[in-house]
Length: 435
Ligand SMILES: [Zn+2]
Image 1 (cartoon, protein in one colour):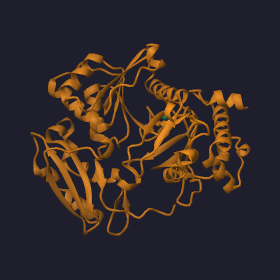
Image 2 (spheres, rainbow, N blue to C red):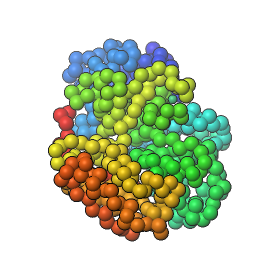
Image 3 (cartoon, protein in one colour):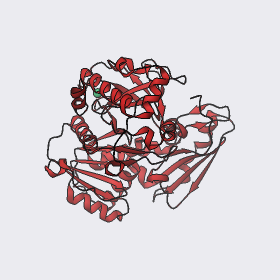
């Protein structure tokens, strides 16, 4: 089983049996070779041989970023690895402590291949493909095997490049897939329209790392005339899930990379459809394993019956926004960023503007400054008027009568730590649930 599991973990389109095999291999290997997990399994009185399939996973202990970090490199890396020779990915640190994720060459390559395969499944793409990554902060890595074979040409357009040059670069490459954070894609799309460039015709636009709000989705669809898919990615796993092409409200979990669980505040498995905390188990990384790892997002698992798009496997609903972006009202109710967004945009004349939206408002950000104070920061466009916000006060008062709203016009809005822009942001400290 050892050898088979070793190979199965690098299979892209894993069947349920493959997932069971990869899971057994990853857990056995961690129990044998990674001190943190060895201790954690012993403490919980479980042995890796008890894992036969995904359903056995809840017997094993949960973990999170702080616990892994506390164990040190000696604790959470596989025994005997040479840290200098490994590939590293850093989490942004926008939410909690940053962590460095280590992988060997094969794992790093598989992580890229699984993302590209998810693009292919999503939009029925063939090879070769040109992939443009927008808004990163560094130039291309050295070319890996996928690129050297000429299957995928990856072009990075870094955010330090002036907007005019970014647009020109995009026009030259004529990409099959464009990926980036919605805030970055949005600025680039506005620049293309400013320059009158309408020849960029990708097959798929992929949005990740920030919540994809409806006004941004609409702009991207109008600019690129193609499907815009929301992706759920993280540094610890790579691609976790992609938005279903048929039913926008659900996401399909990537069977190559991960098994996903949702648990309640007590850590018990949440029933289908019930919202809870997302746990991931990485199916390919044995250098630095993530087993029942709390990623800091909220979501719900849905029935895994065959979807109308043809996908078979784990399906989920992701609750937009990380835990700390929920607004806490004076009566302690917690309101999701998507609801706050809907109050501001759908409850205003902005909603009726359609394509004129960006002429009125170039960019905006909704900030909970204090429990009872919402500040909307807005970069006005040529067609801006203060009348756009006329319903704002009464809409928030309907949420709670003591809420106040201020609209502040600014020249520019800047991304936060790690280049991540938050459309909806809370500055109010919030007591975490028991964990
Ligand atoms: Zn589907």
